[in-house]
Length: 250
Image 1 (cartoon, rainbow, N blue to C red):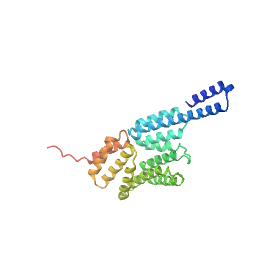
Image 2: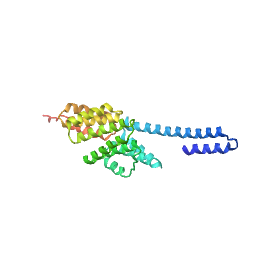
Image 3: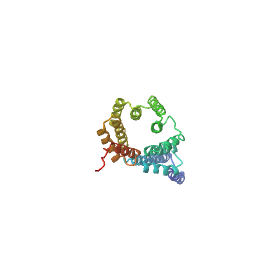
Image 4: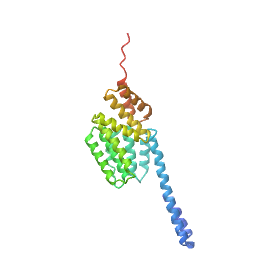
């Protein structure tokens, strides 16, 4: 679309060359600039709609497949597309594959949103693959972003830090810290994916601390609302462990 816009602009420029004056030149340049801004906004809108597949529908499998197809056909924004695919891999439970893919992503520190997505994916992979020290390093790097981020960006960084703190507290079985931090995460949840992930962590913590009724409630919510997230199969496995043992029939 951008190339098509450029062709139209050049065509109009050649056709009107003999009639151009300062006003027409400014009008053509302004029209070209606005057309590019519109196309960029449309592209952002399209990706926002694609994000709903994962964030609201919790369909990690479909989201990953979509990103892989787009990535195979695109020659631009490969870092962003790679990170979107990695996010889908994490949500699908393919953590080793996601970890390997992260090694091929180059992130410029000036782009906070991409850097934040990279660190969040790295944290999730490290924690899931049993490396809490590496996960803590990702958390430390995320905290350092607060120093360079703009005031309007800091709430986004804080939300990621709260989720990381809850994940580390759960992995390290620091229950008092976990419940306080997870309550903060739930109050900040902006989509279904975050709510389901939080419910899963709560279910695991309740199960570990002996609150079986609370664990069952949270895990049933995950199983019902989690779509194709890897958390669903794990929640169902934990629910089977919670099921009362049946006595053999006489």
